[in-house]
Length: 81
Image 1: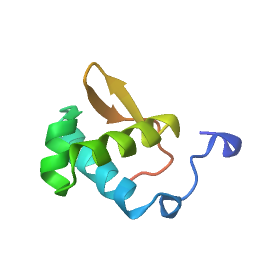
Image 2: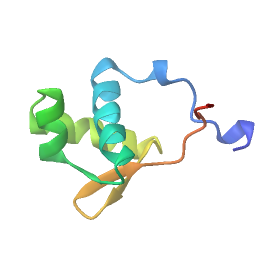
Image 3: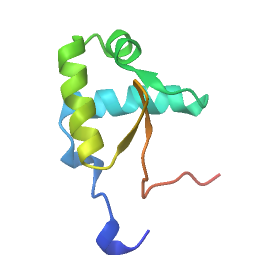
Image 4: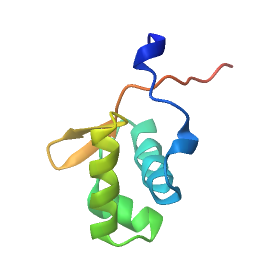
C-alpha cells in the first residue's frame, strides 16, 4: 500500500470503534464475516452503537460490507513470524 493510501494509526479510532473492529477481525480470522448481532454479543454494546461504528469503519475503509455482514478491509499492518 502506498503511503498516501495509508489508513493511519489504529489509535485514531475511538475505543468503541476499536472494540468493534477487533470483534470483526476475530471472526475474520476463521474466514467468517461478522454480523451486527455477533459483534454486539462479543462487545456487549447495543446493536445501534455497533451499527454506527460499523458504518464509520466502512466509511473509513477499514471494513467492507458483505450482504448483511462485514469483513476486514484493506489494512497496512501485518504479522511477522
